[in-house]
Figure 1 (spheres, rainbow, N blue to C red):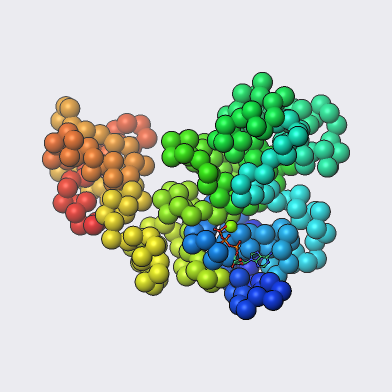
Figure 2 (figure 1 turned 60 degrees about the vertical axis):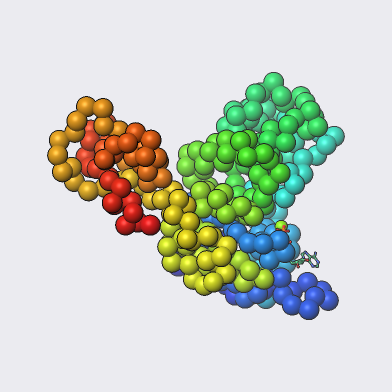
Length: 317
Ligand SMILES: Nc1ncnc2c1ncn2[C@@H]1O[C@H](COP(=O)(O)OP(=O)(O)OP(=O)(O)O)[C@@H](O)[C@H]1O
Ligand SMILES: [Mg+2]
């Protein structure tokens, strides 16, 4: 089972000294290579603890944790951490170091030469959409969103296979946050890293994750695709948290191509069109705003291959 898995938690428990109950309790979770997994749950439910056990900042008090099939206790800790990028809660850039020096933290530890490090730094700044002339600035001279981008670049500098991200966009305004989310999704699709991403924000968890973990009081309540979670919540806790009765939210998670039916009549001029990967929520918007009876769904070549009507969307709700 471990061949296709990047991270496997096998009944992992963490009880801090003097604590009356475990912060993470007998948690089992298998994360596939290349998956984007979001972890959702209230403050104090154990999200950061779960994350920090993967790179051994926190040692589990029970169970077994494997990374790429190896028990992490059998991998030298430096080697383990080099294969895992980490974006900590509250950015955590080094204030007295320039942006370039911040991003080059891992290359410098690894002893890369100056030229290779410089090239990598510039590459990463481009990747996260930061102007390269920021490299001599200090973190306080950047906006919160820009600092987050530096944090991501720094975590990716050693080209790790796994990225642990602890509420990386937590303190960012809604507009900047959406942009960061979209840019980071692009980066992840391009590079195929395995990502464990902690968030408080339900919409963010459902938007970014291929799969979502819902935690409560140190235990996993459900591990499922966003759609699976919304349409079949495992229990009342998940149901309340995810607001599964929200029709718009459900429509947001389903693509036009998944629900379209065959054209009932040939396309007419001026009918609204969407591409197959647009959400049913956008389809609904088109139906309402353009007052059309149907929306045509196009294939990759822009040819109408199916249609959606209000009746089909209603059925989804
Ligand atoms: N070093 C520690 N020593 C003792 N208890 C700790 C320690 N770190 C965390 N805890 C406790 O473990 C529980 C889980 O903490 P954790 O930081 O994992 O929560 P979280 O889900 O990340 O919360 P938040 O959303 O606020 O960041 C909390 O009750 C916390 O007080
Ligand atoms: Mg936390």
